[in-house]
View 1 (spheres, protein in one colour):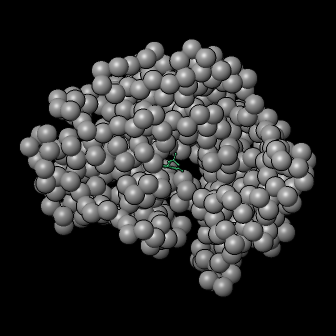
View 2: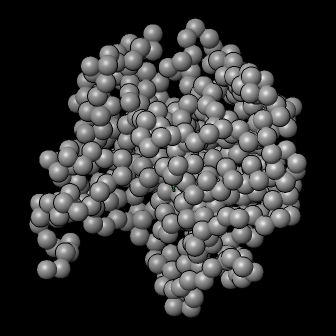
View 3: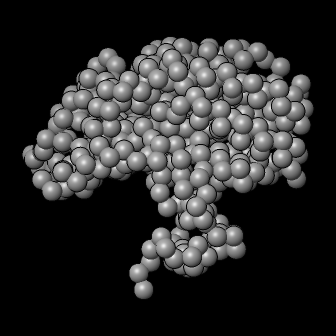
Length: 451
Ligand code: PLP
């Protein structure tokens, strides 16, 4: 029998858990409860197999920036598939979609970030970055400069390389991670770790943790520092203002490459084209994916500065993916960027959706469960706490408060994620003020029910 949307939900769920292994899921729990089946989507709204309409305050996985159901992207994909569905960019060949997309990205990226190495995802792009920065220093006669410094609780992907750069302990505990020569320093999460310090004192001290690490490891061993401008999957952690200027000073001083992982923050999420612009930071390499194509096609990459591209390009770089610069994905990404410019999506975030969401979201901090409610552009978090004055966490036995709140969100037809005791949102950038009101009202109802 054909498996279609018309089958009963329970039958689809049974087939799903019998055959489909889900990422980041407990398959047994899934088989008891059944996965929610999403059948279609338009704008900011998902429809499930029972006909519920759900406001997607996570834009899928932080990626559907221009919203669901854009025919322009479907048309471009179909056209490109008919003309040239596939060709590779290995061995002295290329094609127009990859040329056009790389030129467009060079135009959008700040400074001399003028060169793009394409991958199929953010994880792959970070694997590329590991190999690229190590190859760069080798080519410059410094093969010992191989250590990459990252941060605890960072998320940089799920491949061996990406998950090693990431600082997620549960990921390291499976599969023998991290790979050698990756070192993690503390994150600038003032809410949970700032103690009695002011946010700026704390931001400064966490940035100085980078200098301590460099001195401990030896300057001649450190290749690069990687960070998300705003930590996403770790719980939307906004760094104190003091943090990134100090990081920049330290990297400049010790001749260390800076990698900004823009997989979430890139393409308007923080109110600028790139999150590093929002936090005032100048990287040598940016990791991109997600919003590059608004999730309509899998594509990622590294945008690389003149100096690094020049050195890496001086010998053969023994690296690449079958789908590097995939023509259909590239054409879709290019069309996505065209729409973002034509519709001034970043202006909408800066002037319309951003200020409206900020006002409504921060007002949630009057809720008895909410310690802080923070937002930048279209990514926000709230810290749940039993005691606002001490910023106390919930006891471990109640460590499911975030999960409970997320379930209530779901029951109220709102997709909001939780990371421990933090609730996070990253809605499509094109969300309208009336939809923001619905989002925040549903979030407040879920908080009330969690109380
Ligand atoms: N880097 C960051 C900052 C991310 O948030 C993610 C995914 O959530 C990745 C990398 C990995 O991207 P992908 O899932 O496309 O491999």
